[in-house]
Length: 256
Image 1 (cartoon, rainbow, N blue to C red):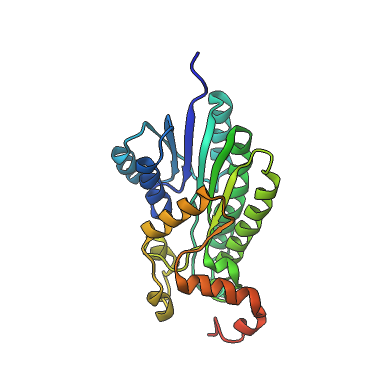
Image 2: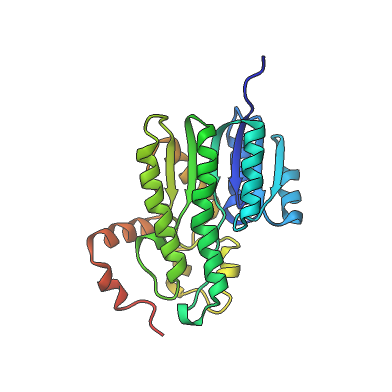
């Protein structure tokens, strides 16, 4: 009798890191029967699926909508798969001071970046294979509160804290759980994030190649590292923000 179907689930798969992760994992990982790609854009989803070598199943779900999360739960219960890989890459950010932002957009950001991460993880965990791999796209913004990027940075700090706790809870299954914390990266993320402001010069200087970020994230997750940080500048940022008080940084950043 054939065993359970081995699958990889990637959220945010129609753009940015999710799309690149799908393409990278498709070519680098063996032992997967089917990829389940979750995203909101039908045209882009069709484009990604056409390029995949593995059997691929698209899910046009909006993870900020409870009804779509219920649909995912129903599919999991029906299929009862063995999940080898989960990549949580759905998310977005918008710059600007909180007082200038649309509260509905900020609430959506929290829903997608935080709530959906928790809910998808909770749905998937009962089906995770022993020594399964879970990769969460966080951000270097998680290391420090960021005026002008307040909700996004807070949401990624939430993801980082969540991953650390989830790792501890998953020791029995020996799940490999990693938070990926890149700095500025050349993806479509900034098309939405910078609707009102230009990218700061210092971020242009450390702008990274997303494929290199993902390659390192994959290797770090394979080695069961808690955090994956790409690039010397971001590694230094991570170190400094652990040593110096955040209040010191907040005196100089994010001023109008």
